[in-house]
Length: 382
Image (cartoon, rainbow, N blue to C red):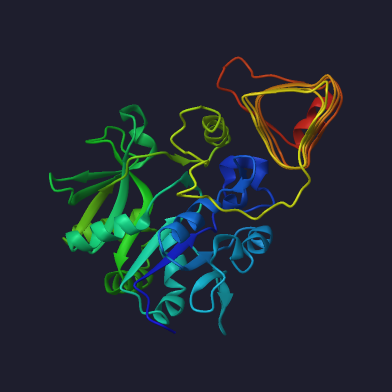
């Protein structure tokens, strides 16, 4: 294999339990987003746009659809003989099946994949965040700082610091301390889960971590704290722009609604930084004479007979006559029956919402309803 300057490793094996039934049979990075995408489209497109064309995708939980979606990587220009995208599931050795027990464990078990490219640097990414980022600029920063590890960080609201891993730094952005979800934070620089390692450093620490029986084999809990403890050169790379962890129903709904804002930082219409996806190959959408659509994204193959406002509508959706849908995400191939009223919800892929169903937020205006087959069953039984 030809030696590579930088190889990306994309962690895509998470269960995503906080997305409930959306990930019952689906890996979190394969969850639909933004009317035509899946979450994994964003890091894969960022790699291509950043000139990183060798990407390992580490899958584990419910990988069938995700593996099929990635295919040979042609949608992201990653179908290459030298490099390209490679799906890396857990595998069996003569003595045991080596399941990924943590983020560091997943990379460790694929050292052979990295060894064949003998890269200078390894970029480690999460497959469950929505953002656009030029990794080449981060790599240049890493080289300029002569860092062993560079971690991308973003300023978060102070009241939300207890949800994130917080990086404390000196004036030169050298990382001096890592605090996982602190009750009282010293600053508001949150880790984005994007790391660039010197390959030699990463290899050494992964091997040591594997030999540590007390380790949980996680970058945030084990590898990064040990590097800081041993005074290695870790730097924070400040990121300015849109970034969203879509690990909950609420945050997934919010990120979709963000796209409907005229001045959204995540500009999907920017042709200089395209987000690529697998084309659904559907017919054009049809808005019936009785249909009304406002402030919404409507994808191919949809048939709108009712009223839709501030809503993201994926491919193949039908909204029947008399239905009123507001501030909702309707995922692929769902059907909203006659005279339904749906507000502030996510309708799961393929769900049929029976005629006359009414779904509105609860007492809290922030309550988002996940409409699944189970939800419909419960409504019909009441």
